[in-house]
Length: 99
Picture: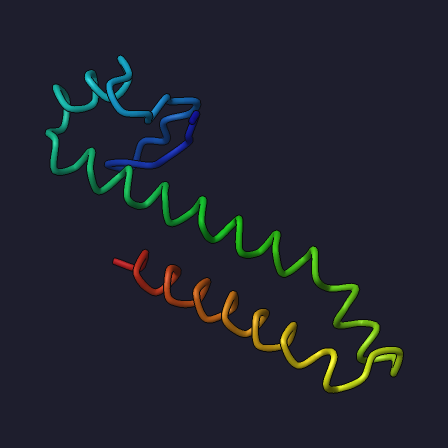
């Protein structure tokens, strides 16, 4: 997985942060394993946020159908609950990413 991240005010672009990669080995030498683990955790959270936002986008048409009265409340309720869960997960991850 190629990632762009910021560390120490410097932006690092197109780094391979997969386990055992040369990029990881170089980063460990430069900044230490604890800092590398933090970077990887942040990138994983960013990836999950992106995934949840894509799921929300992919279900937008169902929300619109409900808003336009083309779907019953009963049929839309499970979708509504799932969308709320995705938004809650996004909010939780974004909160965890704040320093």
